[in-house]
Image 1 (cartoon, rainbow, N blue to C red):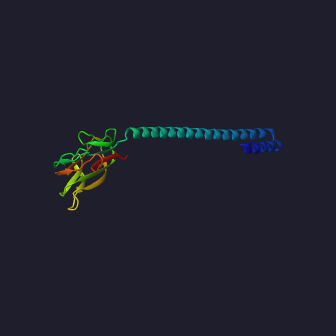
Image 2: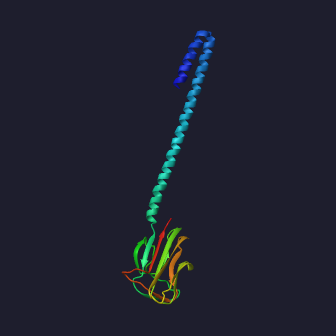
Length: 206
């Protein structure tokens, strides 16, 4: 703007020295129009900057609100559990294996009374099942979702050891209301309150 003013001042002085009064008036009018155009352009630029600034403020406010909501949601939807069996149990084929103690059970995700996990919100979940068995016969257990088998845990103690353990893990995409539980074929499952070898764990990943 300062450069333009200097230029226009020089131009104005030159015009007054070499032009007639009528020409000088025309030159001044042209200068005024030029200055007016510059002012309008600057005003347009300022308006555009103000609009862009307001849009940016709105976007920042939306992102901040989303971050706050996501943080609150994550805190309220912190679902996870680890349950274990604290004593020996003879289980019949198709019977739900009830892990009767919990080390962690956020938002009561795991039901101690039924042995069933009811999925609270749609998302990706991780589940792990470990079974300890103390007979030579093969024992097969299953992680079920709504009655459909997802993964197997197969335990087979050899002739040198009557006590062995096996485990398996799965990541599953589940919907709210899905039911997840563990069942086994006919056999004995070992559990203990100090050595927790038969466990069932799960957690919401996202």
